[in-house]
Length: 56
Image (cartoon, rainbow, N blue to C red; front, side, top):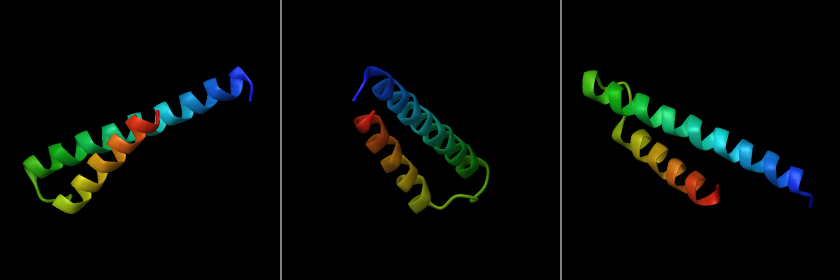
C-alpha cells in the first residue's frame, strides 16, 4: 500500500477515536446531571475508545 492510503486510514481512525471520545465525555456529563446513559453504555464507550486508540 502507498503512504497516502496509510495517511487516509490514520485520519479515519483518528476521527472515529475523537468521535467516541466526545460521546464518552457527553455520557459522563449526562450521568452527572441525569440518567440518560446507563452504566453499561458508558463502559461500552470507554471500551470502544480504548480499542480505537490502540488501533490508531
